[in-house]
Image (cartoon, rainbow, N blue to C red; front, side, top):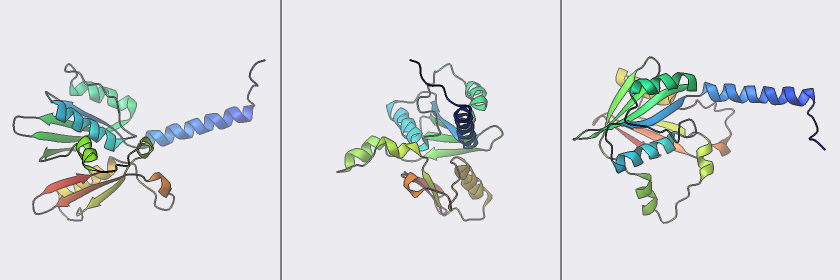
Length: 196
């Protein structure tokens, strides 16, 4: 006894559903998060934590070799629909973060002043509530103090907004919002604070 065959209507419905899912998945921004140069264990853990923040539209298990150049990532990014690179690098003085918008730019460069790893935050909590279902949907992006009329502040705000899918307030399912990414800009010190 074989499996009963599907009707034409079932086949058309399944094909239409798959096409709609591919279009919806292809229309949202995707990202690569990786480091360049010699990193160290804490930098590798920071990259893994930022990948966790960017899920589900990032390459979770991206393998980076020393022989890979930036051209290799750019060549792969086009067919995969990747729109942003978040590249960490470490110098003798500091850790730097570059946010690339593909294919034409702009590129934002930040100096990482201080950071806390996920394992440090979890170890300081008495009861932490983190499970895999939280990472099936993208985080809700909240931008604070980005209302200034300076061009570099507007550029940062638009870049951060374009890194995540837009949310339609009328149609959003509130049960799917499990995470929040808060980015605060301090105009006096010109520092950004990211909280997830």
